[in-house]
Image 1 (cartoon, protein in one colour):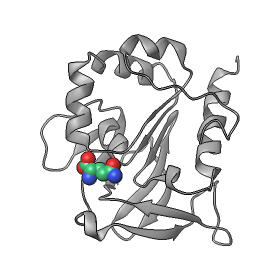
Image 2 (cartoon, rainbow, N blue to C red; image 1 turned 90 degrees about the vertical axis):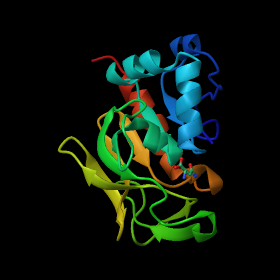
Image 3 (tube, rainbow, N blue to C red; image 1 turned 45 degrees about the vertical axis):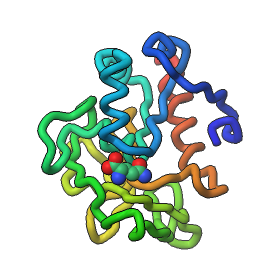
Length: 179
Ligand code: GLN
């Protein structure tokens, strides 16, 4: 997806790989497992530093949980960079996965909404003052931005619609611009 948006995409497998990129997408999956692997491979301090240094990071679904400062019902967080409280599996189990046409502030309006795919998705139940909510459902916020962090509860890579990736690639380009 990012290559279709004019950026080069590489998979980061070791913390040192972070030195070679200008932005990072933490994808969906299973946040408990991802969190354990992040810790085991020594990523935790490096990722915290990367995010805190203003390098753009986009967390989708489990990636959003990894970035969150508060996870309901769970002690401790992985990166704790985003001032949000997330609830995991907020819409139910795998069988309750669904798609929804979503208006996303600055990206997709009502006239041409984004078809968002939710798979055992979390929601942001609360967002702190630095967080700008970009899309919500009844259960809570599902897309938001906090400075150079982009937070999504759904899977924008599962459609052909590049608008959200394009927005993130632009955030990366913006962060690289001097001054
Ligand atoms: N339910 C998963 C979790 O809590 C997230 C699902 C996903 O990334 N699609 O980690």
